Image (cartoon, rainbow, N blue to C red; front, side, top):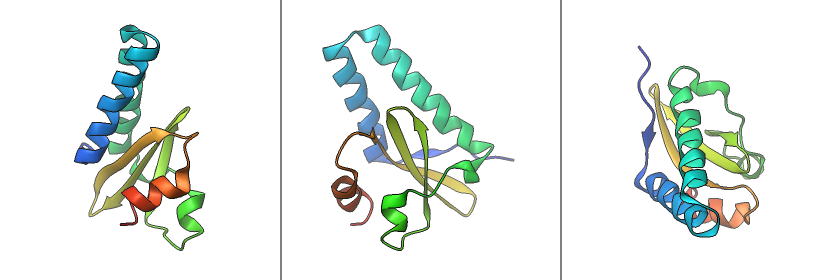
Length: 107
């Protein structure tokens, strides 16, 4: 039986930050829509955890254990270990990804 994905504390904070940013710069309804869509994408990993692609920025560094899915422009980084999906990072894909990945995943 599939296990629900686990969001790291950083990933939970990412969702709160996304909601806050969109609420402040657009509207609360749009923020709610985006966060729910991201949550739905994350939940879909319980059925198909291996469907994500390996992020090229991490593959270039020899790190093949991570995967990502998208709800554009957001990138959702996760890994699967012992059939448990753990989401590590949810971020706008237009950010400086190499620096962010080094700070959040590779440390």
